[in-house]
Image (tube, rainbow, N blue to C red):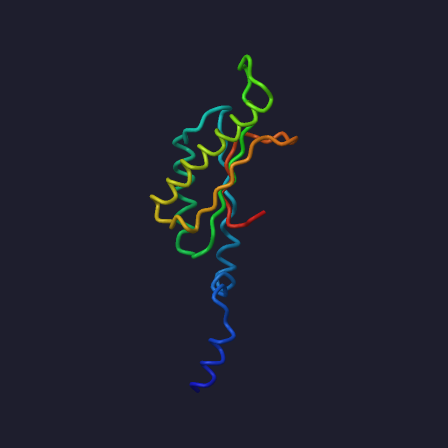
Amino acid sequence: MFAAQATTSALAPDNEKIFLHADHLAEVKPLQLQFHKGNIQLSEENLAAIEQWAQQIKKYDIPVYIHSFSTLPTGVRDQTANDAHQEAVRIAFNRGLITKNLLEQMGIHKQRLILKAMGPDNVVYEDRITLTTRRR
């Protein structure tokens, strides 16, 4: 019996726990948070949604991806296209960082959190954050 246990554990890779909980993880849908243009603060609705989502996901030892999008700022005079793009990336990064810090406070370890801040690259994105367990 000991030999069978050793063989079974030798065949089980470390990441097998992901597949053991696949049915539960399928129930955890990506969370989309909408923002007003240029705003980086989380609304009360967003805070409640993040808290509920974090409660579902924190018990699993899997990565959490924070995809933060921002559109180009408008109404700023004397701003070059490059400056506008950099400002959009800064806004996306700051939104994502606030969300990342909040998820850490809610019990998700910082090594599990992966932040990607994306500005507008020839695609019209909304001002939003997507929290997901999938890379995309």
